[in-house]
Length: 125
Image (cartoon, rainbow, N blue to C red; front, top):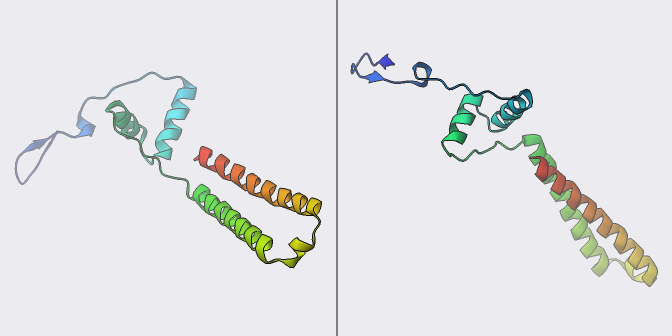
């Protein structure tokens, strides 16, 4: 407890209040610490908020967000090039049907690969 010098009011602070001890296994400790760090909180703050039913908001990993934006831009470029290629490029119309199917398959595979990469990044956030 701390006495406010101006008002004389006694304030209770967390440093002077009661402490709880919670036994945990080493792997649980590491997971709790990692989750607290991900939420940009101390372990005490993380556990307090969790126990009181507060929503835990994690801080997104800036590098992961940058990589997602990059993948999204790559995917947009691919789709736009694909549209342009199919509507305006004479080379596309000179291809045989089999060549068109093969080329379209390659582009779609690239788009699927980028989607999978994006999904993995989002899951790891």
